[in-house]
Length: 507
Image 1 (cartoon, one colour):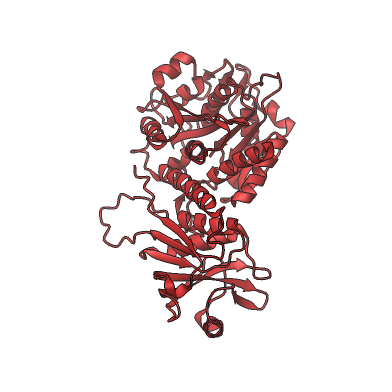
Image 2: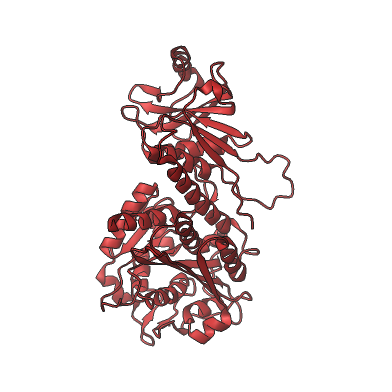
């Protein structure tokens, strides 16, 4: 698996003519009276000429629109690019609009080597947003095509023109942008790998490889250890596959830790549905059913890389859900890690079974907060669509995750956990069943998970929240902004921002 990152950044405040680049990008917004070029260090004559020509060129300022023109003599770039940034007020754009604009431009300028951005920035965070968006937009999966002669290599060098070039906080902001983008892109690559290459054992080894050079301890529990220790959920789901399951525990500890956090990720490397087999069309994207575990893995690594003063433990619950003579059946009863019994009524509701084991294991270490991430339910997509994740759980943790997502630029929406859903999970032969009320299935699945969150040292239930990323983890449509087709890396930026917020609140 290739996780190579080949993009570099620099910020300058010198005249554009002194920067030799393949393309110069300026931003065009959708103003009240038509397209508006955001403040750019171009001559008055050049700006007037561009403004006059935009209607004929079809330039609207819409997000994702990228229009190439010949370079201007007053700059050192061969190409001038007008990049749409969407609606703007008073000539200003949000950090997320800057990320998406930079990502869209870099993605569509693949084949060029060096791109210069001349988009106005008034804060270090805005410069970092441009850098982060560019790094995300430059992502390409090292595909398995045999013919690569028409492949356009991603942009490898980005220069940002800003008056903040000498700001003392800039270096740290750019480093954070690079670390976070690297984590997101590594998550995308794991999700994009075919299940013939990424299965429980290779996923576990990929986690070990990615953690090399970082202060993260990696412990891999194989099927013998999982069986011995009683991880009945993971073993049950994985017993139908020729590729046995794994549990990967990642530990990052800081001498200055202000909190102990646990992250649990669903890692179903392929989900056929098991005996309750999915329709053929429903299996096509099921290599992405490990996106939650991939996000947790790379969040822990990013937190370690940034040296944040927290302790974070990641639990990757990895299995392959396949039908065979050894697979679990509807009506089977599994004894989960910790002792609770679950009647399996549908083997395609397997994610909650592996996650239950992870939640119990995480609880036994008494963290301050547990957050789990999973491509858990098709009901999430029905409720919130393909781009918005659902967050459920304790109000305080859910609200903090929503705030972190807003800051990071990811779409997350809070959902309730109605009390009336719990009785639908009752079973006549076990402590509970793995499916219940069909309507509101995203919330029913979260109610199931809630049963496995343990108590802290104070005797109170550990604060917990669940992120269902079934829709936004995988993009089946066309690329947009900094988001490519297939794996998106959803939840990494939100989780890193959440950890940073925990640190900030403790100051």
